[in-house]
Length: 284
Image: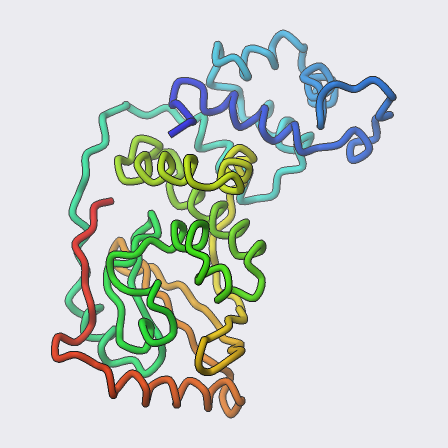
């Protein structure tokens, strides 16, 4: 997955120091810098450790820095709480076993809820595969149908790019959320497959994946462009349930967007099949 387990800590440290400018940490930039961010020696100096000791981390010769050293490195690299937790996870000792595909099972109560809610809703895996969707979700976007992958659609489908009012923000957030969801399970077969596909298909994905940003994809407000209803400003919530994630889109009460969603529901009823919510078998 372009991120082998043998040196995940070193790759992360190198990626993050490239994003910190000398000015951010009170160092002179100088005219002859060859790196976009901090040099290894500068990180070591600011963290209060020797340059050779820091080099051991980046080259994978030492994978277990103390909590104090980790805290110093996190401070120098301006990591927030989420990124600090991710950094700590990269150093955690754990037995390594080959990951195997496992069938993602949707809890029965979640199937019923998906059919009952009167807003666009779908269920996704941690690799952003759509496992099931109600008719309002697919009426909102056919890319929310079971069997689709949210990250792949966002990066390579021109219709999804037109659907997202702020495509760049959506891409940055989703790539970081994908890495956050994987955590230390870098051998997940579905994730390996997806990263390989997207690395070939999207230059923007390669750039963002190399940054190693991590961010949970939490609730937010998004604006989308529906081909029939026009602009829709919707709230999005993601609720983890039984190993999968329930995603809901809904409008503010009494808003024009709420009226558009009611019209969308009417359109969905006219095209609803007898099979109910769509589902797809997925491997995670």
